[in-house]
Length: 350
Image (cartoon, rainbow, N blue to C red):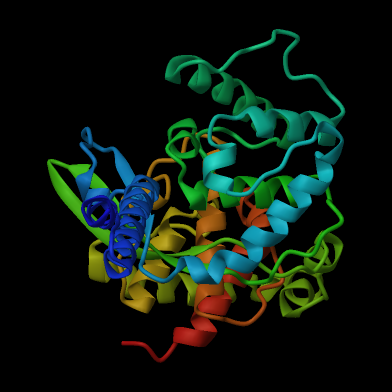
């Protein structure tokens, strides 16, 4: 009997050993979960722009550390809007980068907003090639609908497909504004963006990217009060040459520092020399890929003028009472307004 009892006791595991075994099992489970989480977090990380294998003149962008926090309110507004807009299709967007990159949700969104069909062909996005082809089709449709030349759009196929958040936000904000969607976007969102471009060697710069501006309506922003230049053209045209010569002298003084000769104000509508001038006045270099150095069409000239106005906005100069479209169209009065704005703020600059 004692032997039998001893044999049974020998088979029993002390309570302390059971606790240790359960604790060991729990540690293994926690360690496994930590490992899975680590792998998933690594998969979601964006590679540093310098890690890309870039071809000549290619460029990549990435947000500076902690800059994404500034975008969170805008991102949430856009996610809520898309989910509401496509609720009848049972679409749920949780992450703009992960959910929009292949174009399928953009396809549904733009068709609903425009009331048009992009294509009758049903495309199954089974691979990278077909996904990019579909995305290109959708972006071309969006650009044509909104009247934006693809060369100057801030959203390219490669950028959207590679989940570039800045490009995706530019696209969505433009769609919201064009279709006059009834939502309120957070105003004046700007972030610091690192740009890497391959020009024989990798060139790295940090720029301020403006994502949203003021929520004032287009009618409000385009409405112009009469100013001194209206009076000059209407009532004192004999003084026009004096004003033009004064502003031309101001331009020549500063652009001579970078060996650029200015002969006439009437040809400022391409925006190039105005961008050069602003760079000299603010003592910074505007990278060549940020504008068209030799614009050959109105769309390229307009994009240059938009770049100029964005630069002016970034340093918080006063209202200029004209638009990029005014300057790009060659309106002399508007060109003079921009020049006088710069003159009045930098006339004492050596």
